[in-house]
Image (tube, rainbow, N blue to C red; front, top):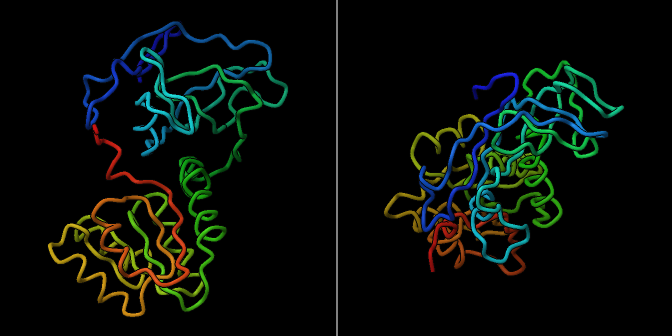
Length: 257
């Protein structure tokens, strides 16, 4: 994102999407460089996480979080570098994670930031395995899914930031783990890189039949992030007392009715 010493670049929500968002629903703006007040920190964005929940924040329908207002900067988790600080806990050059949103710079309350190790080899991990997706996967699977050794765990969107962690933790817990993703390349990634037992392509015309064959003893835990046809294939295979952590229903996020 380009800027001068007195301006910064931000992406604002220009209109509420109907169906899938398009570029016309957003607008790039140059704005005055934020000045941190007492207790705030000026942060330059290095990494921005794009997450499914953002689609819900573009809508003004009732939700667990308030919508982004028209003309406001889009929300988003970030990793950044401190440019200047008026908070005793931070100094110039510190690496931090927070919620700067879709903009090159932001003045944020120091109490909302997390200082990251200066020698963190991959700072973007603070937005993945060490951040919200990792916490979501770990807590959703272990606290809600409660997998037990020998059970069958099925993971939707298994190649994504959350699903990839769910599948690996399920394997560590001693479960037979079936991952679902879109396309042959992602399915190979599930088995060859993540070590899942089975990788299934939800685009396959016989996906439901493949899933049934992969789960001969039924499904004990289904980590849900998709909904739609994937859930319809899972539903008849659920065992009595099966657990379903519901992380998301992305197949429905662009529905206009």
